[in-house]
Image 1 (cartoon, helix red, strand yellow):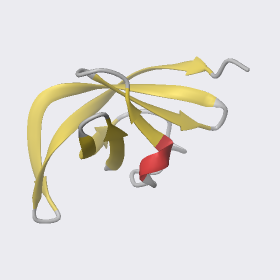
Image 2 (cartoon, rainbow, N blue to C red; image 1 turned 30 degrees about the vertical axis):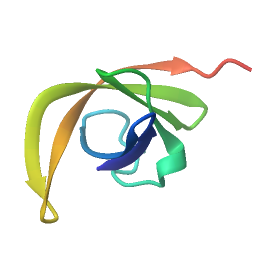
Image 3 (cartoon, helix red, strand yellow; image 1 turned 90 degrees about the horizontal axis):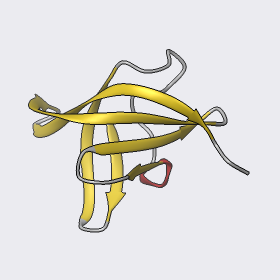
Image 4 (cartoon, rainbow, N blue to C red; image 1 turned 120 degrees about the horizontal axis):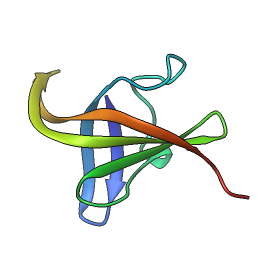
Length: 77
């Protein structure tokens, strides 16, 4: 699960897939909503891209969108 900050506020998402070293929870500052369909997380020198699937999952008493891993890119300096 990730909490991300976007232009419209905070969103919690359940993350599926991605690097095994990626924690499933992290502070809001580490995840950004790139657009309506993508969540980007900076992790271990890379940007890890997730796509919102349109599915919802009930977790921790909340209904959250599911985001699946798409790909990783290097962070430009």
